[in-house]
Image 1 (tube, rainbow, N blue to C red):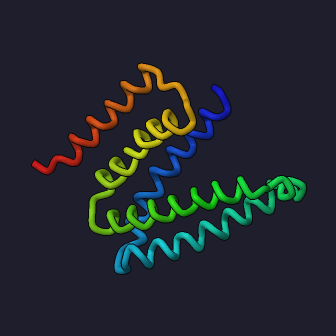
Image 2 (cartoon, one colour):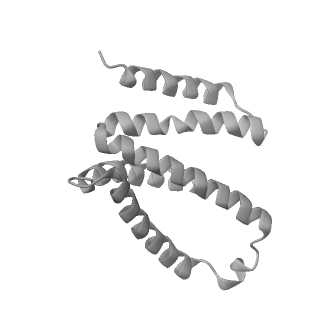
Length: 141
């Protein structure tokens, strides 16, 4: 198995746990407070991770371009998390998590448009199946 695939599968596994654990953690508090507390923990964990695995010399390679685009990514992550937690507080985990994963379709489209990545028929079919799944789960009848 390719290394990136292993990492992606681990990400999928932990992301699945994240939604359920977060829903339990939101019991009795607002989604906004829950997100804030969670984000503080994430910051501590990521900074600890960076202190252990990122060599000091790597920090000198950061440039303005990196900071601008990573900052923009942080902004979109923040917005995604804000709305995810608002939805998670009042919706069921299965529906909220699946709709959130519709971001895959957005990522595929943006990768094609902005990064000029080639979208194969296989990827396009997979994206259409994701959209179909979203429609099935989002339908409330």
